[in-house]
Length: 283
Length: 306
Image 1 (cartoon, chains in turn orange, yellow):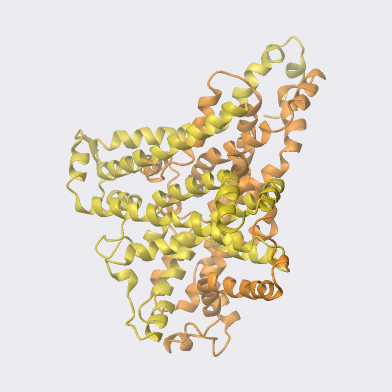
Image 2: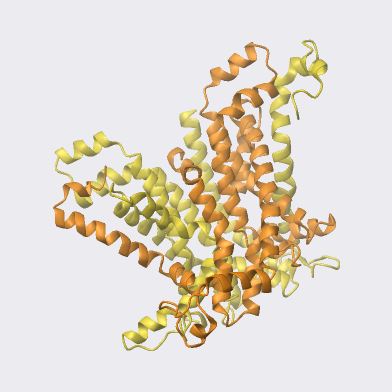
């Protein structure tokens, strides 16, 4: 273990370390803590300039209710859910298939295809913006859920295929051979042999892709424009324009928008980190 | 794509499918991903490059102008501002692997509650950049932001970070460093978890410690984590868009714009699709250097292990 375990240090240092942890944490999360406190303030606190102290009166329920009653925040949240969930499911499914094909079959061009998926994953969004927007207009999907769902599926497939391919490649080849010898078709091999083994990878990808798509701002800005389909990121940015001085509502709205990925992260932390770092232990 | 679709045809031992399935199957499995990728990623790249040789308002006919958009870029002051700001982003973003490593070393202990502390440190990466941007815009606000409270506390004048051309980009980059550092930290924490204990113990017996231990023993073992951290940081710096859009919309007077935002602005606000596409193409070419580097490393690794 590096650095040396703090328990081996003199007691004063060890205790100093323990005490420093919460202090460091508070400093690190200070901006967020301020937002959290402000989401519970009253408007009079804000007009009097009490932004950083404790609220003089706590208006937790009022502020959060106002966010949902006075603004389309509920609708935006719903839109984000409608866009995100099918995208996650379909992306994981098709990239598991593609990852299997790239990992366990030899065919001409497989390395090239793999390279294409890796490279595609790093390109700047702006090089896609004009044609993708144009294509969605032509398909009649501009300003509908479909434009976001289809695009996100396509784009996230790059990263997910890379991930799945590496994961599946590490599976023992003998398992697949054994199934083939027993007469299983390739589709059965995929479904009954590979799929049960890649479930952890699917979970990791699902939480990661959920977060990426939920937090997407650029495509939500470019591919949709009406409130009926706007996801929460763009909705929140639009609301800021309307509530210029009502920081307590903007704060509450921000927290509501940030909550789903945070819950996801805490619920599936192990999978989440495995997803983010698999590349690090492999690359 | 269900296995039960047509049992007789699929299972018939003499059928075409049965005899050739190991050749056909990979293409079936790849088809949906490949088709989606081709339609929404590969093809648009080529189209964007094509559009960059045209004058186009997004609605009417495209007019071929050859390299005129690129020639104009070389005389466009804002293009240089955007390019320079991307350089600043890139340079300062390189702090995040360093700070990330420092925080990871700090947190790599086994004390009560450390798991929760690690998760909370990772927090900024999970929340949307829109929220990060709002939070920091607020933090910098000259009339009530925490920053101005602190500067006035020490007798200084409030600094209007986001409306001062000299500071604005740095202000946004610092906001971007927050989640990026959290990401690098988690990469290094995982790397530290997988260190080879025997090598470290052996080095300790040889009296290695502190900096020399870190430099000679630990960092070489962390190289895979460093590689990924640098790659995602470079990509993050060049992709920067959300924070600029949220915090300043490129202002004041375009001084905080970056290539990604400038492209968006030119295309959708000024209806200059061709010009915007040219900016995007330049950004794409810059990014290609890193993509090529990453691919080279990745595929070299591959051929060594495979």
